[in-house]
Image (cartoon, rainbow, N blue to C red; front, side, top):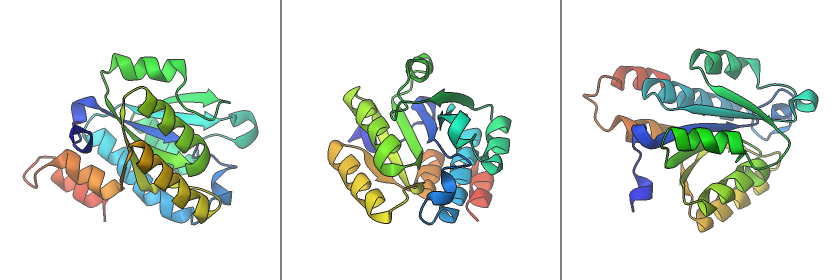
Length: 184
């Protein structure tokens, strides 16, 4: 039951491969950006570590500029990768160093890199929350199947607004106004 509760002190945000040459092919790509920005703001407000991967950036480009600016502002850490799983030794070391037990995942593609990363994190006994409105695939059916598979494996399927308010806990919290504005 604890896997459903978010604790800012033990949670990190992992953004997977939202890159210049990959994003244009994603089904309803424009709907991914607002929830992803909300997650970045949420991470900033609650001081969550932000980890970002880029799949073969020499060929697929860097993280899209629209997000890169915000990610630089929150001092996100970036890693290039060629493996589909984002569970690189350097990333796992950072997760361990921050004493993280819960990973919020957003990015592309749902059925490849997001799926394989989720599977690896669950195998290593991490709580994984897939932010469904901030993940995508080229084919919507692939996203649907990936979300179902990840849920069956034990991941929590959620959305950006649920994440923000779960971390917030109370409308009287000092971060309420920032979170509320990010959701508009």
